[in-house]
Image (tube, one colour):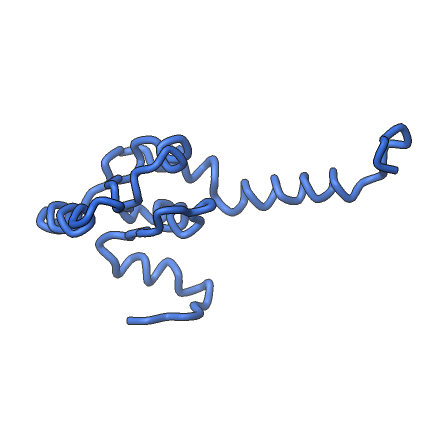
Length: 125
């Protein structure tokens, strides 16, 4: 399958049909797809970097994808066990911190702060 645009109502259905979400990017600004997948209980495999370790802890499978063959070996290992299970039972903690409802409110608060009345003593005025 190749989707370039997915109706938001079908996202859960597509994650439900998957065994594993792989985010193969070596550099990722955040990875909302990772959190979406975790929210459905889908196991996730990401590049082992400080960013994902700090954000997601042990709630995801990690592998150093910069090492040739490491991704293939991890996929073989993970997909040989049926079904693939998340490494930590409580991926919900990461979802609770980074799910859309939480992020939406945080972004709205940020925009309100930035667009709000300017401090008259600011040097930028």
